[in-house]
Image 1 (tube, rainbow, N blue to C red):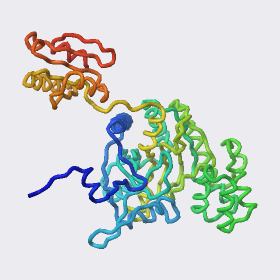
Image 2 (image 1 turned 30 degrees about the vertical axis):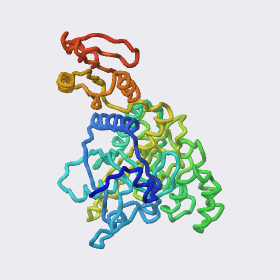
Image 3 (image 1 turned 120 degrees about the horizontal axis):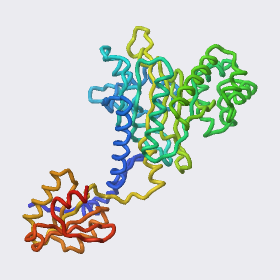
Image 4 (image 1 turned 90 degrees about the vertical axis):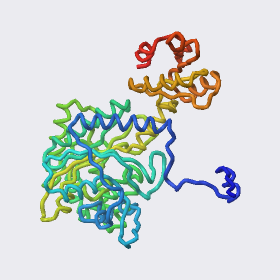
Length: 439
């Protein structure tokens, strides 16, 4: 004979303590409702700008993630990648972003018509440090444009970024730079190992000038080189100032691209973007423009979106030495959620707009909820035969805006009693009137 016990009793018997893996979290319904609203807002904005959906696997072959066109051996992203083996002893990794899988997809599908403008939303994984707004499993929502060389692609994406965050009610600042300009600055400072130096520069805001100097000294560069570099990357330095100081061909090209981009942004009335000379982004695949987005006046200091141009990655995956221009930006869903959470309380625990309370009218109530659902209204109903008071309390706790009380008298009159849960006002209405009022 089997003995059934509940979860609490099982845990007491086994002495088991339930815990989440470090750096991940459950998202309860009141938060998930907001998450879905964010996703729907982003999806609508992406499609308004002509981007189409794509889905790629969570798992990639390790050689894909470590390929020359990928993150780069010195990048923090690769160091933070979760590595595993399948039962065939093949090396695999959980994707650390959505860009590498996109590049692999484009390389595997040579028949794609260019430009290819795609968006993708899904979880990515990084085994990195944890802080407010940073987790080991988090969603990214990416847009990428493949096959456009000029700055029009960047301008369109940054205009989209402004629109998306306006729709989400978040004030933002977009910091913009160019890797070609950074490479030119490094060249003028006599720094030859550009990729490792850029990883150090990317930490300037976190570890300060002293920390970056220390990292450069560890790599064998002199204090004079570090000082010259930090002078050219000083806070609030302008494109106009750098134009007088940059002499390298690559650095000059980076300046020209930035001037072209900011010209387009002015035409598109994108007012939240500004030049930031020290912005590097640590991933090794960036070749041109880079940008990061921050919430203005928020306790969340991590970037809420970021990206840039990576003209060599797709071609390296495809082989044959081709250069396939590409630029993209990733929206960090978890950090966006944290920004919104800091501004407002999540009260809505149900997506139902109406909660039906039967008073010995189960048959009629079942018919009613189905009719309302057929009219496109989200409806829930008491399934436990509780009293009116308890049901009203439940609906209030769940944040459901309307209740319908259906008793024998209402059935005889072919009407329902609609209660507004915000004002407490009650009205006797017909089915048609209820549907209009709730909608």
